[in-house]
Length: 132
Picture 1 (cartoon, one colour):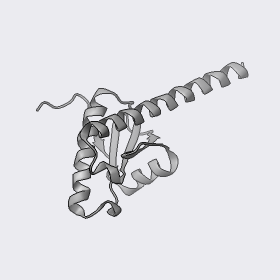
Picture 2: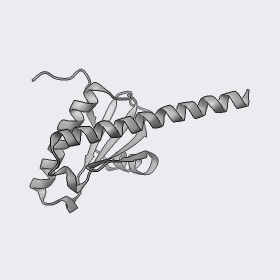
Picture 3: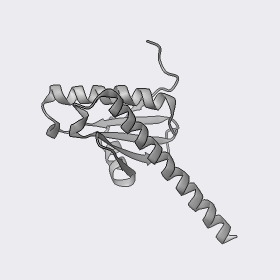
């Protein structure tokens, strides 16, 4: 198995997760929630996973986390926006969902994220025109 060209850095500290939760944007799909926040000090992509105890015991949580990591590696190696932290929060349906449903949901969430970036850029351009 060959390694992808994009190296994903993991979020590991609680404050990094909380920053994404409190200061970022949230996008929701049936199997997962994507939280994003712009980062200042790091130019790559940082990725974190949250699977709560509500999902089940450690075996179940680790299975969900492994599945989400595999989907994230596939999606983020093809398309991503540098300079952002991403937190993927699992929902109960992620345990039973087929891999292509997980893949489709993450692609959908990434499209929503990129659309929000474009809208933000368009708003900034409109503000520039009205100021001038």
